[in-house]
Image 1: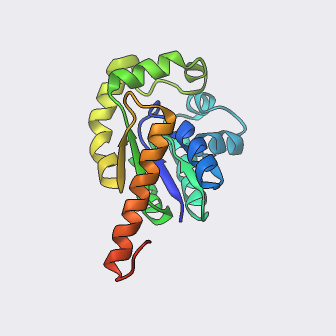
Image 2: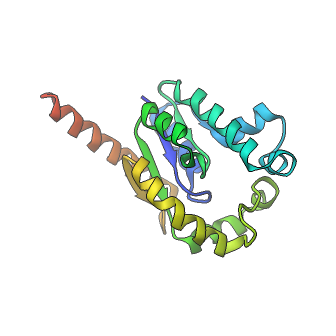
Length: 185
């Protein structure tokens, strides 16, 4: 079983994947880093040279590859949930943990990260907070439909978020075990 982290960029997927990897002694991978590795260029370069559709095609290929792994923590890109084929792969891969934050917090985190502008292009003409609010409005119902677990990352330390994810996973495992007539203890 994998643990699949989904959510808008800036919600902490990569950092939480690292923390969960340390705590659970499982390998982790960031899908965006794998996309860049396979393409031999940054996501911003892929967008600039080939457009969003080409990026989404490569993203779907990577999501399908990562979903075949077992026992990994997968940090997916914020838009990975947009394609139905990816949503199917996410469901197959293991429990999906949706990390959330307000648009204002996401904007603050993104503007505070010096690598964001160079690696992650704006997805709309507006950019900034307006873009985040607009895309969250569209994506939130999709994240919600994909998620087995939702963890709010607002005003929490990385340790608190990792603890909450692990607790939710343990509770979910216990509920599944009880449904089969066994216990998780």
